[in-house]
Image (tube, rainbow, N blue to C red):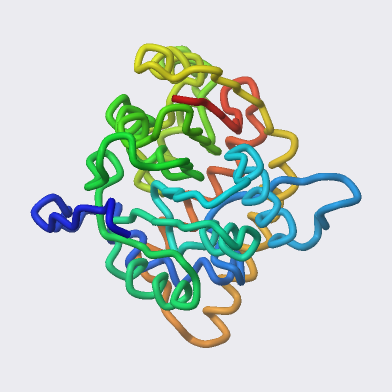
Length: 289
C-alpha cells in the first residue's frame, strides 16, 4: 500500500500500562468473542440473537461499515484495531475493500496479521494520534471503542481528519459521558474512575464537547446517534462472561494475570455504567470531511 510511509522513527516503542493490558489480555478476549470482536454489540430484534454475543458484535461491525458507505474500491483505516475483528468482517463482506489497522500492541500486530494473511488488510504498530499516512489519502476511518484510551481528545480527532480525503467519512462507536466529570454524582463518579482504572482509559469524552471539538476541527454533517438500548443486550452478557471465564481458569488451575484481572474489573464497571444512563451513554458518531 504505497500511500503508507513506513517511517519507523514515528512508531511508538515505549511500553505503557495500556500496551501491557492488550499484549497480555488480548488472548482472553477469545472467550468474549470467537471472532475477536473486542467491543460490545448492536441488537436488532428478529435479526440478531440476544443469546449469542457474536451475532450482536458482528452486527456492530455491520453498522459501522454501513455508515462508512462502502460501495467501491476503497481504503479504510481502523484506529485502534485490536486483533482486526472488525477489519476481517469488512474484508469478508466487501471484496474490493482494503484495510489498515493501527495498534500499539506487538501481540496484536503479530497475531492479528496472521488472521488477515489471506485478505487485503494489514495491521501496523503506530500511534493513532500520530500516524504515518499522508494528508488526504484515506477514503474512510473508523474507531470502535478505541478513542476512549486517549480520552476522545482533540489530537486523535484531528489526526483522523488530516488523513481523510475530502468527503471521506469518519465513524466512531464508543461510550461517552453525558455531562462533565464535575457534574457526576458520587456513584457515577466512582464507577467512572474504576472503569478508567480497569481498562486504562484516559477518560471518556463528554458527548457534547466532542461534537464541539469536531465542528471546530472542520467536520461536516455530524450525526450523533444514542444507541445505548441497542448495545444493552450485549452488555448484559458481561457478568456471565466474567463468571464463565473465571471458572474456566480455575478448572484449568491457571492463575489470573494482573492485566486479566484489571480487564475483568473494567468489564464489571462497564456493566455498572450501562445502568447509570443519566451519566453514561453509548453513541455512534458519523461525520464527513
